Length: 285
Image (cartoon, rainbow, N blue to C red; front, side, top):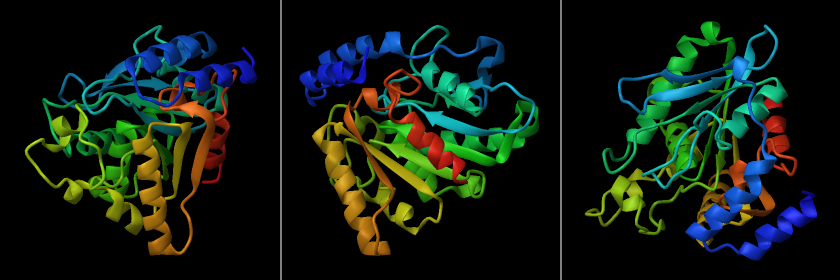
């Protein structure tokens, strides 16, 4: 499928976040994404005691320590998965990383309502500490571990950038796609209250935005042109606060012609416009 046809189909779906949009976007992209080299893939490695403390490790060819992309999936804080064997998503990101000469660790984390904030942050920190302590075993460069998350995953990444605790200095940069940064304006949809607390009137103390503004970690933010309105509101709040605090704009990439689902699931496909941006960011450090 050529890019013009692909984007025409996405635009025809609109930007309203519905199950129909999710299913149609998945069906459109699934045949277009690559499968990883399973001979260089190890699945369901434990990084903690919980049954969801598992990750898939995708390694590139070669013997030199590789940069590593730690990917944190989406799912509204209550669902989502790193990618089962044979699934298109998010094995696509592992396959893309292998092709780029990067390693990729795609992680699962505990979900609401079993857990609440800051469990996602705690799990990403635990995963970072695991990767750092096993870097030589896994063949990755501990100085070039990059965090990446989409949607709820981006919010967990933002929480780690804002307050890294024991993971301070364990990652070289962070990529956040369509995340939620200012919880004072976050919509109370059916999902977020399960993670942040439906009984709480004010979620703003849990916002990663102040910590993001104070952090010196290199960050790449992304948004989709056809993203849901809340993501545009969040990007504007981030941009306004960043400019007010620093006097310049954050590094923000708007993915033309993409919706909330296609933003990360396009990576590695024949219509991929985000992978080159991520690779460029990683190669800078």
